[in-house]
Each structure stands twice: as structure tokens, then as C-alpha cells.
Length: 209
Image 1 (cartoon, rainbow, N blue to C red):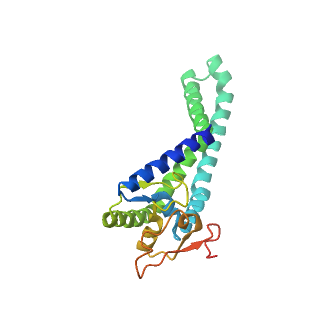
Image 2 (tube, one colour):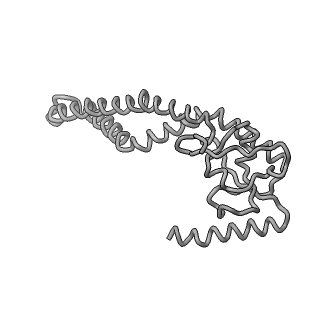
Image 3 (cartoon, rainbow, N blue to C red):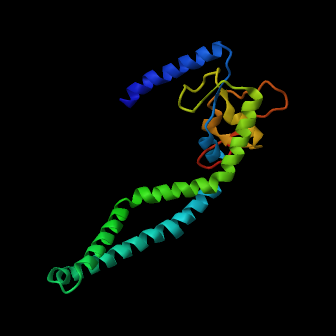
């Protein structure tokens, strides 16, 4: 079904782009998140995130597992006393409630840890996002694009869509870009003298071919 939808979506986007181009509205391709991840400094964010997961997320999980085991043991040990009246049932009920809450937390731990990790990622990458946003705004203010689309929303090789990844990379003084970003479209400044398109790099190694 997704493949079938894509057959309709891509031509529709291409038709829109071609029509927009015919009306002399400038069209560009760009994505802030993708650009941030393409910056050389982003590898440091990944490294710090691994440390966070090891030193914070992991210990948090272990703490809740230990807490659950303690509550579960208390719950089971006091169940008979609570039933016979040797211990207040309210106390046993309180333990049961806490035990259930921790169990629910552990059941949803994957989503919770993923949310916390993404929050941390955003915090660590915030300076890079600010750099990209500032450069992107400067390009838009200067070149007055009427339509910006994301990668994947059109067929690569189109000559009517300017590659703003290249423009933003130049503004950020980057020397290279991943190959898949350079191949998205033509350099808007290629015809201008003194401009150099950032070289392609292998996304896996970040090395020039």
C-alpha cells in the first residue's frame, strides 16, 4: 500500500514543483534535522549520548528493577498477615499500589528511555541546531525561496529544485557533505565565480572518495 501511495505522491510533488517553477517561484530542498546530523561535530553528540545511556539510563533501569523486587517480596510476605489481620490491610494495599506503579513503569521502559534519550540528544545538539537555523534563515532571506521541500518528496536529478544543503554548508564553512545530500540537486551558486561546492563524503566514514 505504501509503495502504491508513493507512486501517486512523487508525481504529484513533481507536478507541483514543475508548476511552481513555471510560475517563477524558487524551489529548494532542505531539512534542518538532516543537516544537523551531517555536521562533523554531530559525532560528538552521538558519543556523549552513548555515555548518557550507559551512566544514566542503564542505572535508572536497574534502580527500578531493584525497587520492584523489594516491593514484590514485601507484598508477598505480608499478604497472609494482611489477610489474617496481623498487619493493617491499608499498609499492604499501599505496597500493592506502589508495586503496580513500578511494574507499569518497567513495562513502558522502552518508550520512557527513548523519550529521555531524545530529550538529551536535543539538548546536546542545540548549539548545532542554532548554527544551522541561523545559516538557513540567512539563505532564505537572501535568495527568497517560495517553496522548500524535504528530501524524498521529489525525484533526485530534478534541475528545478535548488540544493540548499549545499548553500547552508557553504554558509557554515563546511568542507564536505555526505554524498546523498550533494546528489539531491544542483548547487544554486554554481554559476557564480568564487564559489565551491562542498566535496562528497562517504556517510559511513566521513571520508572523501
